[in-house]
Image (cartoon, rainbow, N blue to C red; front, side, top):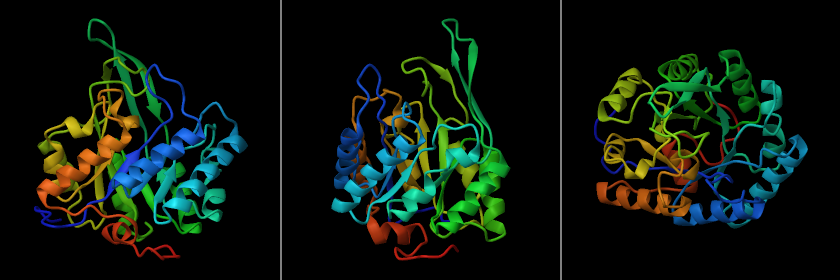
Length: 302
């Protein structure tokens, strides 16, 4: 893994979400508008959420509507959804095949392993428990589905052992080309209870934390990006270091937890500008897939 990125292409992911603090939930038209605005601003990947009040079929219908509309205007956009609300992993990923068959699935999300977070009370004591629960067996099932639909993974790394799963799968040649690890660092605010301070999962976003993960990834060919959960990534002085070290960026209001007045498009634009200052070209479409190690027309798993 190189210490200096030079003019290495940079991929931006926009993580958009219909839920914002003290505002109405966006309908599908609002989500479509946000997705298109982010792509217009320079994002290559859009991670989209759906209205969690919907049942499975309504949720899938909403995702298909979004995907088809976005793809009509931005055919090279790389789209991937969140999980369905379900008790089993099969239920959580029941939308993957329909989205793939419709040609609107770019990546398959997977969070391989448990992650915990909580709130801080008025005295600063940790309270509550917000859990990401996705066992290695669940992750393996999701990986097999991704291979069946010929799509790469977007791997959520909340803690170091999440990354160990990815590296183990890479070592035995199981990960589809184009798979990216998403290094999620913990901010100071809750993603669940907006406006409240939190005791989040993961490492703090520091140069030393990035270096620790990159040390773990020595010898790996997996592309990586950084997201900051519970704070605004583009407000962090460390984001420049991420770009200099060769990382890609994930921005958007989902992660920022209302810690920034900027919207999704503005965050993407800020990432594009910082990349320009560092000297890394921001890429989309086929060039983005190439930066992730996959041909745009790839139809088979690695």
